Amino acid sequence: MSTEIRLLTSEDHYSHRLLMNHAFSQGSVVETPDPNAPPPEMKDTWGVFEAGKLQAALGIDPFQTHWGADDVLALGGIAGVATFAEARGRGFVDQLLKQSLVAMRDAGQVVSALYPFSFAFYRKYGWEWVGQKRDCKIPLRELKSAPEGRYVETVTGENRSETLSAGYTKFAKRYRGVFTTETHRWESKLSHSGNKTTYIYRYQPTGAYLLWRYEGGRVREFTGVSPAEYRGFLSLLHYLGTQAKEAKVTLPDDTPLASHLMHWDLSVTVEPVYMARVVDFGAALQKVTISPEVPNGTVTLAIHDEHAPWNHGIWKITVEQGTVTVATVIGSGADADVTADIQALSQAFWGQPSLAHLRYAGRIAVAEENGYRLLSALLPPAVVYTLDDF
Image (spheres, rainbow, N blue to C red):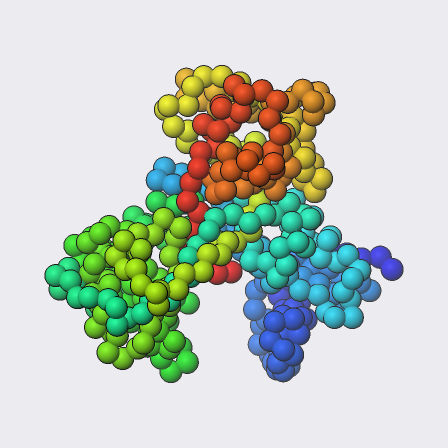
Protein backbone atom coordinates (compact mmCIF):
# COMPACT_ATOMS: atom_id res chain seq x y z
CA MET A 1 0.00 0.00 0.00
CA SER A 2 1.47 3.37 -1.00
CA THR A 3 2.28 6.03 1.54
CA GLU A 4 2.47 9.81 1.45
CA ILE A 5 4.83 12.01 3.44
CA ARG A 6 3.86 15.65 3.84
CA LEU A 7 3.72 18.55 6.24
CA LEU A 8 0.65 18.48 8.45
CA THR A 9 -1.96 21.20 8.12
CA SER A 10 -4.55 22.54 10.53
CA GLU A 11 -6.95 19.92 9.15
CA ASP A 12 -4.66 17.21 10.55
CA HIS A 13 -4.64 18.65 14.07
CA TYR A 14 -7.16 16.25 15.61
CA SER A 15 -5.48 13.16 14.11
CA HIS A 16 -2.13 14.42 15.36
CA ARG A 17 -3.52 14.96 18.87
CA LEU A 18 -4.83 11.39 18.89
CA LEU A 19 -1.37 10.13 17.93
CA MET A 20 0.45 12.25 20.54
CA ASN A 21 -1.89 11.15 23.32
CA HIS A 22 -1.57 7.53 22.23
CA ALA A 23 2.23 7.68 22.26
CA PHE A 24 3.03 10.02 25.14
CA SER A 25 -0.01 10.39 27.41
CA GLN A 26 -1.02 6.79 28.02
CA GLY A 27 -4.08 7.16 25.83
CA SER A 28 -5.64 10.23 27.46
CA VAL A 29 -9.02 11.07 25.94
CA VAL A 30 -8.93 13.71 23.20
CA GLU A 31 -12.04 15.83 23.02
CA THR A 32 -13.81 15.94 19.67
CA PRO A 33 -13.05 19.31 18.06
CA ASP A 34 -15.71 21.99 17.92
CA PRO A 35 -16.87 22.08 14.28
CA ASN A 36 -17.49 25.83 14.60
CA ALA A 37 -13.99 26.64 15.86
CA PRO A 38 -11.05 26.97 13.46
CA PRO A 39 -8.48 24.20 14.07
CA PRO A 40 -5.09 25.29 15.44
CA GLU A 41 -2.30 25.85 12.96
CA MET A 42 0.25 23.05 12.54
CA LYS A 43 3.88 24.08 12.10
CA ASP A 44 7.00 22.14 11.16
CA THR A 45 5.39 18.72 11.67
CA TRP A 46 5.70 15.93 9.13
CA GLY A 47 3.40 12.94 8.85
CA VAL A 48 3.24 9.61 7.05
CA PHE A 49 -0.18 8.75 5.67
CA GLU A 50 -1.42 5.41 4.40
CA ALA A 51 -4.77 5.26 2.64
CA GLY A 52 -5.31 8.82 3.83
CA LYS A 53 -4.83 7.98 7.53
CA LEU A 54 -2.05 9.46 9.65
CA GLN A 55 0.24 6.63 10.80
CA ALA A 56 3.30 8.42 12.22
CA ALA A 57 4.55 11.94 12.80
CA LEU A 58 7.71 13.91 13.59
CA GLY A 59 8.19 17.55 14.57
CA ILE A 60 11.14 19.82 13.84
CA ASP A 61 11.36 22.67 16.35
CA PRO A 62 13.42 25.60 15.01
CA PHE A 63 16.00 26.89 17.47
CA GLN A 64 18.99 29.20 17.41
CA THR A 65 21.85 27.91 19.52
CA HIS A 66 24.93 29.66 20.87
CA TRP A 67 28.17 28.17 19.61
CA GLY A 68 30.51 29.72 22.12
CA ALA A 69 30.97 33.45 22.47
CA ASP A 70 31.01 34.40 18.80
CA ASP A 71 28.55 32.28 16.82
CA VAL A 72 24.91 31.26 16.62
CA LEU A 73 23.80 28.26 14.56
CA ALA A 74 20.33 27.26 13.36
CA LEU A 75 19.36 23.95 14.97
CA GLY A 76 16.49 21.59 14.23
CA GLY A 77 15.14 19.98 17.38
CA ILE A 78 13.56 16.62 16.59
CA ALA A 79 10.55 15.99 18.84
CA GLY A 80 7.16 14.31 18.92
CA VAL A 81 8.37 11.22 17.01
CA ALA A 82 5.48 8.76 17.26
CA THR A 83 3.71 5.91 15.49
CA PHE A 84 0.41 4.23 16.33
CA ALA A 85 1.08 0.81 17.87
CA GLU A 86 -0.57 -1.09 15.04
CA ALA A 87 1.63 0.72 12.50
CA ARG A 88 4.99 0.16 14.18
CA GLY A 89 7.73 -1.93 12.64
CA ARG A 90 6.86 -0.85 9.10
CA GLY A 91 9.54 1.77 8.53
CA PHE A 92 7.39 4.89 8.88
CA VAL A 93 9.79 6.63 11.28
CA ASP A 94 12.66 5.64 8.99
CA GLN A 95 10.97 7.61 6.21
CA LEU A 96 10.30 10.57 8.50
CA LEU A 97 13.87 10.82 9.80
CA LYS A 98 15.27 10.79 6.27
CA GLN A 99 12.77 13.46 5.26
CA SER A 100 13.68 15.53 8.32
CA LEU A 101 17.31 15.73 7.20
CA VAL A 102 16.26 17.12 3.83
CA ALA A 103 13.83 19.55 5.46
CA MET A 104 16.41 20.82 7.95
CA ARG A 105 19.05 21.26 5.26
CA ASP A 106 16.58 23.20 3.11
CA ALA A 107 15.68 25.40 6.12
CA GLY A 108 19.34 26.19 6.82
CA GLN A 109 19.34 24.23 10.07
CA VAL A 110 22.92 23.02 9.85
CA VAL A 111 22.81 21.00 13.08
CA SER A 112 20.17 18.94 14.87
CA ALA A 113 19.53 17.52 18.33
CA LEU A 114 17.05 15.21 20.02
CA TYR A 115 16.29 13.40 23.27
CA PRO A 116 16.19 9.68 22.39
CA PHE A 117 14.00 6.90 23.68
CA SER A 118 16.83 4.65 22.43
CA PHE A 119 20.40 5.72 21.67
CA ALA A 120 20.89 2.71 19.39
CA PHE A 121 17.83 3.56 17.29
CA TYR A 122 18.81 7.13 16.46
CA ARG A 123 22.49 6.26 16.10
CA LYS A 124 21.53 4.32 12.96
CA TYR A 125 20.45 7.60 11.38
CA GLY A 126 23.57 9.58 12.27
CA TRP A 127 22.74 11.14 15.64
CA GLU A 128 25.16 10.51 18.49
CA TRP A 129 25.48 11.56 22.11
CA VAL A 130 27.29 14.84 22.78
CA GLY A 131 28.25 16.63 25.98
CA GLN A 132 28.12 15.57 29.58
CA LYS A 133 25.90 17.16 32.20
CA ARG A 134 25.91 16.57 35.95
CA ASP A 135 22.69 15.83 37.81
CA CYS A 136 23.46 16.77 41.41
CA LYS A 137 21.68 16.21 44.70
CA ILE A 138 23.02 18.74 47.18
CA PRO A 139 22.54 18.15 50.94
CA LEU A 140 21.40 21.61 51.99
CA ARG A 141 22.40 21.10 55.63
CA GLU A 142 26.05 21.04 54.51
CA LEU A 143 25.92 24.44 52.85
CA LYS A 144 27.06 27.57 54.63
CA SER A 145 25.89 31.14 54.42
CA ALA A 146 28.18 33.62 52.68
CA PRO A 147 28.39 37.44 52.47
CA GLU A 148 27.47 37.26 48.77
CA GLY A 149 24.04 35.98 49.76
CA ARG A 150 22.97 39.55 50.58
CA TYR A 151 23.14 40.37 46.85
CA VAL A 152 20.56 37.76 45.87
CA GLU A 153 17.17 39.32 45.16
CA THR A 154 13.73 38.08 44.14
CA VAL A 155 12.56 38.86 40.60
CA THR A 156 8.86 39.51 40.06
CA GLY A 157 6.74 41.40 37.57
CA GLU A 158 5.47 40.96 34.06
CA ASN A 159 8.75 41.18 32.12
CA ARG A 160 10.76 38.60 34.01
CA SER A 161 12.34 37.02 30.93
CA GLU A 162 13.57 40.44 29.78
CA THR A 163 15.06 41.02 33.23
CA LEU A 164 16.90 37.70 33.07
CA SER A 165 17.96 37.75 29.42
CA ALA A 166 21.34 39.46 29.91
CA GLY A 167 22.39 36.98 32.60
CA TYR A 168 21.08 34.13 30.49
CA THR A 169 23.06 35.19 27.41
CA LYS A 170 26.26 35.70 29.39
CA PHE A 171 25.94 32.13 30.66
CA ALA A 172 24.90 30.72 27.27
CA LYS A 173 27.95 32.07 25.44
CA ARG A 174 30.22 29.86 27.55
CA TYR A 175 28.87 26.74 25.85
CA ARG A 176 27.82 25.07 22.65
CA GLY A 177 24.16 24.13 22.61
CA VAL A 178 22.44 26.69 24.83
CA PHE A 179 19.59 28.29 22.89
CA THR A 180 19.44 32.02 22.34
CA THR A 181 17.19 34.06 24.58
CA GLU A 182 14.75 34.43 21.68
CA THR A 183 14.26 30.65 21.33
CA HIS A 184 14.74 29.63 24.96
CA ARG A 185 11.46 28.29 26.35
CA TRP A 186 10.99 30.90 29.04
CA GLU A 187 7.29 30.27 29.54
CA SER A 188 7.68 26.66 30.63
CA LYS A 189 10.64 27.46 32.89
CA LEU A 190 9.16 30.53 34.61
CA SER A 191 5.57 29.35 34.90
CA HIS A 192 3.89 28.20 38.09
CA SER A 193 2.31 24.75 37.83
CA GLY A 194 0.88 21.96 39.95
CA ASN A 195 -0.20 24.55 42.51
CA LYS A 196 3.51 25.30 43.13
CA THR A 197 5.34 28.60 42.69
CA THR A 198 8.49 29.00 40.61
CA TYR A 199 10.71 31.43 42.54
CA ILE A 200 13.21 33.56 40.59
CA TYR A 201 16.35 34.71 42.36
CA ARG A 202 18.95 36.95 40.72
CA TYR A 203 22.48 37.76 41.80
CA GLN A 204 22.12 41.51 41.38
CA PRO A 205 25.75 42.50 40.61
CA THR A 206 26.01 40.28 37.50
CA GLY A 207 22.47 39.26 36.51
CA ALA A 208 23.03 35.50 36.97
CA TYR A 209 19.89 33.79 38.23
CA LEU A 210 18.47 30.65 39.84
CA LEU A 211 14.94 29.20 39.47
CA TRP A 212 13.66 27.31 42.54
CA ARG A 213 10.69 25.02 43.09
CA TYR A 214 9.84 23.52 46.47
CA GLU A 215 8.34 20.59 44.60
CA GLY A 216 11.12 18.03 45.12
CA GLY A 217 13.64 20.76 45.90
CA ARG A 218 14.25 21.37 42.19
CA VAL A 219 16.51 24.10 40.83
CA ARG A 220 15.09 24.54 37.33
CA GLU A 221 17.91 26.72 36.05
CA PHE A 222 21.25 27.73 37.55
CA THR A 223 23.31 30.23 35.57
CA GLY A 224 25.99 31.10 38.09
CA VAL A 225 29.57 30.62 36.94
CA SER A 226 31.82 32.91 38.99
CA PRO A 227 32.96 32.15 42.57
CA ALA A 228 30.90 35.08 43.87
CA GLU A 229 27.74 33.89 42.05
CA TYR A 230 28.20 30.37 43.41
CA ARG A 231 28.68 31.62 46.96
CA GLY A 232 25.61 33.83 46.66
CA PHE A 233 23.33 31.10 45.33
CA LEU A 234 24.65 28.39 47.66
CA SER A 235 24.05 30.79 50.55
CA LEU A 236 20.45 31.16 49.37
CA LEU A 237 20.09 27.36 49.20
CA HIS A 238 21.51 27.15 52.73
CA TYR A 239 18.55 29.16 54.01
CA LEU A 240 16.08 27.28 51.80
CA GLY A 241 17.40 24.22 53.64
CA THR A 242 15.15 25.06 56.58
CA GLN A 243 12.25 23.92 54.37
CA ALA A 244 13.86 21.31 52.10
CA LYS A 245 16.33 18.51 52.74
CA GLU A 246 18.15 18.64 49.43
CA ALA A 247 18.31 20.49 46.14
CA LYS A 248 18.30 18.74 42.78
CA VAL A 249 20.16 20.73 40.13
CA THR A 250 21.57 19.96 36.69
CA LEU A 251 24.89 21.64 35.92
CA PRO A 252 27.32 21.72 32.97
CA ASP A 253 30.42 19.57 32.93
CA ASP A 254 32.71 22.46 33.88
CA THR A 255 30.83 23.23 37.10
CA PRO A 256 33.03 24.29 40.04
CA LEU A 257 30.50 22.88 42.54
CA ALA A 258 33.02 20.43 44.04
CA SER A 259 35.26 23.35 45.04
CA HIS A 260 32.37 24.87 47.00
CA LEU A 261 31.00 21.67 48.51
CA MET A 262 32.35 18.14 48.93
CA HIS A 263 30.56 15.67 51.14
CA TRP A 264 29.63 11.99 51.24
CA ASP A 265 25.99 12.98 50.79
CA LEU A 266 26.67 14.98 47.63
CA SER A 267 25.41 12.83 44.76
CA VAL A 268 26.51 13.47 41.16
CA THR A 269 25.33 11.49 38.14
CA VAL A 270 26.98 12.11 34.79
CA GLU A 271 24.66 11.90 31.77
CA PRO A 272 24.84 12.89 28.09
CA VAL A 273 23.35 16.27 27.26
CA TYR A 274 21.42 14.89 24.27
CA MET A 275 22.01 13.28 20.88
CA ALA A 276 23.10 15.55 18.06
CA ARG A 277 23.99 15.48 14.40
CA VAL A 278 25.60 17.64 11.77
CA VAL A 279 22.93 18.11 9.10
CA ASP A 280 25.00 20.02 6.53
CA PHE A 281 28.74 19.70 7.18
CA GLY A 282 30.01 22.17 4.59
CA ALA A 283 27.59 24.92 5.59
CA ALA A 284 28.05 24.28 9.30
CA LEU A 285 31.84 24.49 9.24
CA GLN A 286 31.79 27.76 7.35
CA LYS A 287 29.45 29.34 9.90
CA VAL A 288 31.84 28.80 12.81
CA THR A 289 34.42 31.44 13.67
CA ILE A 290 37.88 29.90 13.84
CA SER A 291 40.60 30.91 16.25
CA PRO A 292 43.26 33.26 14.85
CA GLU A 293 45.77 30.65 16.04
CA VAL A 294 44.57 28.12 13.44
CA PRO A 295 47.43 27.88 10.91
CA ASN A 296 47.14 27.99 7.16
CA GLY A 297 46.91 24.57 5.59
CA THR A 298 44.78 21.86 4.03
CA VAL A 299 43.22 18.68 5.36
CA THR A 300 41.20 16.05 3.52
CA LEU A 301 38.39 14.47 5.53
CA ALA A 302 36.37 11.42 4.47
CA ILE A 303 32.86 11.34 5.95
CA HIS A 304 30.54 8.35 5.78
CA ASP A 305 26.90 9.45 5.95
CA GLU A 306 24.43 7.12 4.27
CA HIS A 307 21.31 9.14 5.18
CA ALA A 308 22.57 12.59 4.14
CA PRO A 309 24.36 12.00 0.83
CA TRP A 310 25.36 15.67 0.58
CA ASN A 311 27.76 15.03 3.49
CA HIS A 312 29.07 11.69 2.20
CA GLY A 313 32.46 11.71 0.50
CA ILE A 314 35.87 13.34 0.78
CA TRP A 315 36.09 16.98 1.79
CA LYS A 316 39.03 19.27 1.16
CA ILE A 317 39.20 21.89 3.91
CA THR A 318 41.56 24.81 3.37
CA VAL A 319 42.50 27.51 5.85
CA GLU A 320 44.07 30.67 4.49
CA GLN A 321 44.52 33.82 6.54
CA GLY A 322 41.67 32.90 8.89
CA THR A 323 39.23 32.00 6.12
CA VAL A 324 37.91 28.45 5.72
CA THR A 325 36.84 27.02 2.38
CA VAL A 326 35.37 23.56 1.95
CA ALA A 327 34.71 21.50 -1.15
CA THR A 328 34.09 17.86 -1.99
CA VAL A 329 36.76 16.11 -4.03
CA ILE A 330 36.89 12.90 -5.99
CA GLY A 331 38.87 10.03 -4.54
CA SER A 332 38.70 6.95 -2.39
CA GLY A 333 38.56 6.88 1.37
CA ALA A 334 42.20 5.79 1.41
CA ASP A 335 43.15 9.20 0.01
CA ALA A 336 41.90 11.12 3.06
CA ASP A 337 44.03 12.42 5.94
CA VAL A 338 41.24 11.66 8.43
CA THR A 339 38.23 9.33 8.11
CA ALA A 340 35.10 9.41 10.29
CA ASP A 341 31.48 8.37 10.17
CA ILE A 342 28.88 11.08 10.67
CA GLN A 343 28.33 10.06 14.29
CA ALA A 344 31.96 10.63 15.28
CA LEU A 345 32.23 13.71 13.08
CA SER A 346 29.16 15.20 14.79
CA GLN A 347 30.70 14.61 18.22
CA ALA A 348 33.93 16.28 17.12
CA PHE A 349 32.01 19.21 15.65
CA TRP A 350 30.24 19.80 18.98
CA GLY A 351 33.60 19.40 20.75
CA GLN A 352 32.61 16.97 23.51
CA PRO A 353 33.92 14.30 23.18
CA SER A 354 36.91 15.91 21.52
CA LEU A 355 38.61 14.79 18.34
CA ALA A 356 41.57 13.57 20.43
CA HIS A 357 39.24 11.49 22.61
CA LEU A 358 37.56 10.02 19.53
CA ARG A 359 40.97 9.05 18.13
CA TYR A 360 41.93 7.44 21.43
CA ALA A 361 38.63 5.52 21.38
CA GLY A 362 39.26 4.28 17.84
CA ARG A 363 36.32 6.23 16.40
CA ILE A 364 38.32 8.04 13.71
CA ALA A 365 41.16 6.91 11.46
CA VAL A 366 44.22 9.11 10.90
CA ALA A 367 46.47 8.64 7.89
CA GLU A 368 48.35 11.93 7.99
CA GLU A 369 49.37 13.76 11.16
CA ASN A 370 49.60 17.28 9.76
CA GLY A 371 46.05 17.01 8.45
CA TYR A 372 44.85 15.67 11.79
CA ARG A 373 46.48 18.57 13.66
CA LEU A 374 44.78 21.10 11.39
CA LEU A 375 41.40 19.39 11.81
CA SER A 376 41.94 19.39 15.59
CA ALA A 377 42.50 23.16 15.47
CA LEU A 378 39.33 23.62 13.39
CA LEU A 379 37.27 21.40 15.74
CA PRO A 380 38.60 22.27 19.21
CA PRO A 381 37.29 20.73 22.46
CA ALA A 382 34.31 22.54 23.98
CA VAL A 383 31.77 22.10 26.74
CA VAL A 384 28.26 21.24 25.52
CA TYR A 385 25.18 22.17 27.52
CA THR A 386 21.57 23.23 27.18
CA LEU A 387 18.81 24.55 29.43
CA ASP A 388 15.94 23.37 27.23
CA ASP A 389 13.93 20.20 26.71
CA PHE A 390 12.00 19.73 23.48
